[in-house]
Image 1: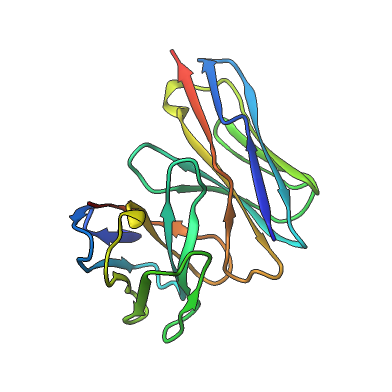
Image 2: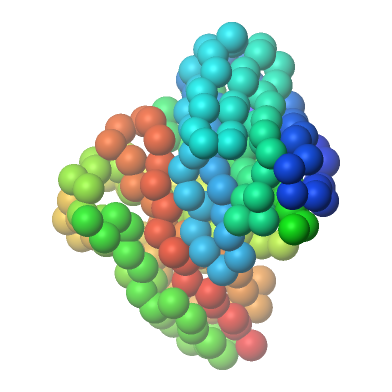
Length: 111
Length: 111
């Protein structure tokens, strides 16, 4: 059974204070790892898909990286508008359509 | 493009009542999904439709039925609502087995 664990559960940063969120996973063959951002009262918004170890993707202040056991979402010089819950999900090779989600990391960036 | 739309946004039901949640996408995606999101738990897949004319059970299908009306629309029906079905329901769509795009959600309370 695919499993995803995200840490920390909550993270509070000062504006400009860089940090990383962790997503550890177990899956029997990785088809893809997905990062989403979710604002309160809204649906998850797609950020990145990573397919293989060593892959990296960037978007503005966010960079996602992938190893064989975990993924990191690095946030560089965050701003208050980066405050949200960040969700990680994996899709195994045996799960054509099913995504297994972690519980998320609630990020708060204070001005 | 509106992406994925869901109706209604909010709903309050009494135990035993029935209702249908509607979902539509305008991205010409083949696959559509229904998830529920509960506090302290990750998003869990209820049902999915890999393509028009097919539906399959996800992780938590009990108490729900679905209909893939056409390529654009995928509905979720609660025949006899129970308090345990109080949740936020998200519809999503994808081109195939790849990235899923989510709607804004329906917040359902069953009294």
